[in-house]
Image (tube, rainbow over all chains, first blue to last red; front, side):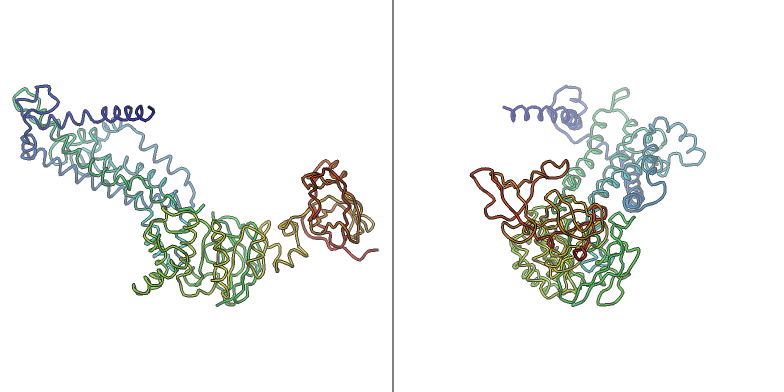
Length: 271
Length: 342
């Protein structure tokens, strides 16, 4: 009885989460003629919408921008946040206690509050409608996010193992490479995925700080899709594009989910 | 094969800030097993390994000052208490790591790992991750990681196999003849494993000696209470120590003292000071004066064959040879040596 109740509740939650996704998938497979038929399953599935968006430079260029800006943001954020988190975990220095709260303070500014001034500033600095013009504001949010994730993760690493490896005959560098790096890898991966999702999904900065397909990312580009008819909404194309941008996120989550749930450190302590 | 030594060493704790051990001077002879008891065992071992800050004094290996040597240069086989196996490596790779670090060829590594796994009963677990093992199995992996190596200069063991007591005598046999420092939680275990026993207390070395020496003439309260001990308050004056049990003719400087009486020294028949206690049906011994004393445990313990008497309460007459009583300074815990009786 209890199990049945749990199963029902779980199903409900999954359904609430999944129905909109399936609805978008369904819309993306409908032809312009059947898009308004209000049926859940497309009666005549077609890939026409996908062909359409991949045939338009608007979408393919936006996809390139999204991937490029997302990856650069991720690499920069992780490369800077990893040593920072290492220092916050392992070293003693003045003002250490202030670093994390201050980075959080930076991150809690709502994007909408920042975007106006940034618009003016970026125009003056010639950063408007460029890749760095998006990567920089993304970093201001991605760096705190990565630093918090990594610091929390690094605190859980049994650093004594570094000494154990040295007692086993490793040089400090060997101990770092053979023991610390593999133990830190799931945390770095987690931080990288969170940062990538953050920049991949952003809309506010993308729509405000770009004006052409030089740097417009997919969430912003969706608003510029031409309709099938003069006053019609390009519903099918938008749905197809939405599916395409969801897929990498979905695949990454599924591939890394076991690593994300860092069960690796379970069972380190002998007690 | 090597001797180990500490000369006036202070050791910082895991946080690397303030010393947790001060002024430790200690020698371990070639081939000797030294058991270590008390608080600060792990810090002492970490100083010997080279993983702790040593702000004062010198660590000696074979008579050479090794204080600044890297851990890998010291050639010590170390079993750590916690975090024993590397969590990201299978048991097989855990055991192989020290050999790979030493540059062994792959074939020889596999052979040695198989042999050690066999000896420790880990063969069936070789392809498991440490998280799939029980606590005892994990400790065996840690022990195995030390045993795979060619004989190191010395073994340092921090409560190895605490979850696997039956394997301890075997490990004792495996390290026999090699200089070993063995941290123990249990005094009885320390006495049986170590040629000598070192006791750490209050951040210093309280005493080093054979188990018999420590039991016979403990230097401090910490050492004395490693074994069961009745502790009574006493007052010294005029060549007599007054205790709740009665006066003991012992000459120490006047003032408050702690009187320690080993259970084994309370005899039903013998020479010495005689007093009467009440034996309860469960074998507990009480003394009227102790029961009335506001502080402390009113019970006495003694190794009496006839103490447990299901018949009920009765009185027992006990004797104590005053020379066997331990006198300790209540402020410092240091042992007081009585002078000749007046």
